[in-house]
Image (tube, rainbow, N blue to C red; front, side):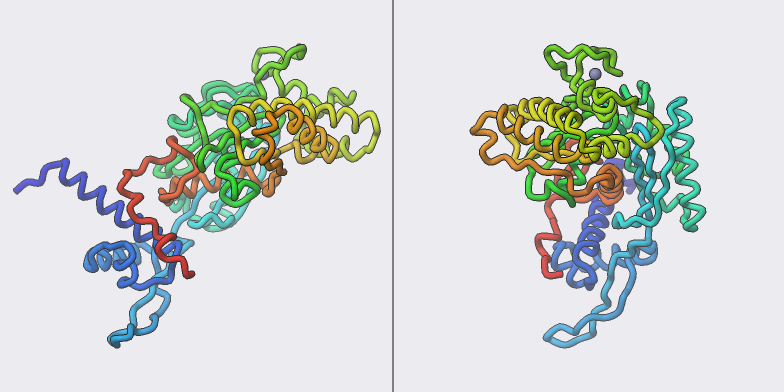
Length: 420
Ligand SMILES: [Zn+2]
């Protein structure tokens, strides 16, 4: 009998799902035996044996010895662990000034990193320089580019995460750049996901930084421009098109400076690093050292500069109070270049946020600095790639993440086996 295509598709999907369940279990709880995998996943023993043999022959799992025999005696079971060298992920943070590319192993541990000054000539030049930097990392560390299963990219831009398209990057001057297509040259079989940088930073802070305790959080991020990200019940809130969080382009009454987005009086024309340097009477130099210029200004300890930094912090705090009243988060986290602006900006920010938010919404509010600092964007991009690669059951990326059938959530091994 000829099998119907729909049935064949369903079988292939089921097989793939079972493989993911086994890989997730071994990754989170290994080393484990075939019998333990069968018991925890509730998959049939012959199915588990088949999957484990297949994954071992592909190099995804590796035998690491034998465990204790069971109480009833019998043969000691062979134990399997996840082989973190079985494949790689690539993370890319395109900053306004510096672009960082990280090659990481199958569990997200960094193997190597490259930094290049972000070329502003054209998006094509930028994409070519990312591909070149990745190529150098592959050669230097003898990594086959075909072993890269996923690429995570974060950019300071409005991003359509479903299409992988940068829609508008005011501070780079680019519109409608298909980053997913542009990076296919690195490895056309890799999954490529693109996100807004503030959203990536918040996902990183939630997974391994300052927001770990807070599934409802607001984050403010500065990198030449200013953006925000919102996390609601442990998932990034994207909005209909993926553009949620663009507080930097909200207009402030009385502000008239022209903004790179084409409007006037946007928040970022007052509080971005360039704006702060300008307001202090300096000429910001865009040569990759903007953060150092801001830090030097903050450390000058000039009373006039300190007053200005408090004022900037206060303006930012007012804007953040609107988000607090709208979202009612557990925490507000300040990140990116704001960390370089020192205590005076932070104090002005906290004071103004507390003054302007509804007392009821502000009473339990935690106000924190980023714990991951300058590494947050590239960690966010790494986690995005890792999630695309593993298609893990736990997600912070919300609906635009690689889609999984709901049935994948039947088994969550980390909760079943927690004794590691
Ligand atoms: Zn603007």
